[in-house]
Length: 248
Image (cartoon, helix red, strand yellow):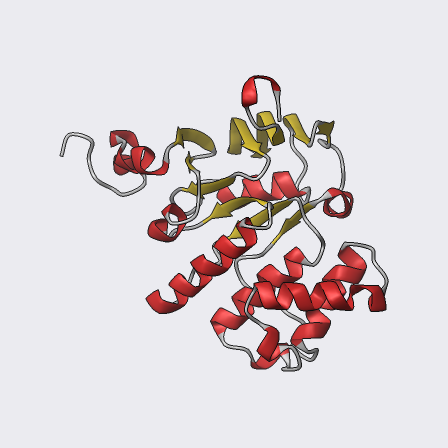
């Protein structure tokens, strides 16, 4: 807890920039996430949301600015090193090891991501499978899972690395409405463990059901950040993200 009762920031981005030639995909972004907080990020396709995740996770290096995690400057740490200190992510399109069981998939995350011994990880793997409602599929081949189950497995593998910060990239995409509700409940369960979350999603109602704050990215710029419902009702957000003219 920081001075004045404010929760300590677990993640801070300061004036972060990334460009590819003349194309600026992250334009002087400032972002802060408190310990235990859940932040949703929305924006049009190509706005720079996934690039922002890559800059946080370390798979892409910033051209300018700084990234700090739990008070430590990690601007130039590689992705594997960031994973070991507590930053983990899921991917928009799940790519499990199809020929391995669900249990084995999560075990890989625990042993290689978290750096724990195989047998010492068995108990933790079962805890994660229960948390993500996959216990009944522990011995099923990952290649035979439904889309919702693969999304759950994607979260489970990320959780197996024992993250303090979990990055979720459009995990609700392609799901039916009942499946989306199930996924929202799974994310709520993960939140209850104290993990901080940043979630990119196009399905806005799913985000609003979970997150404390909502940020909007457009053309690499952060154009809004605050209370989810207030952000959604902002004229600028309605015009840029939803295609509704501000004076409509």
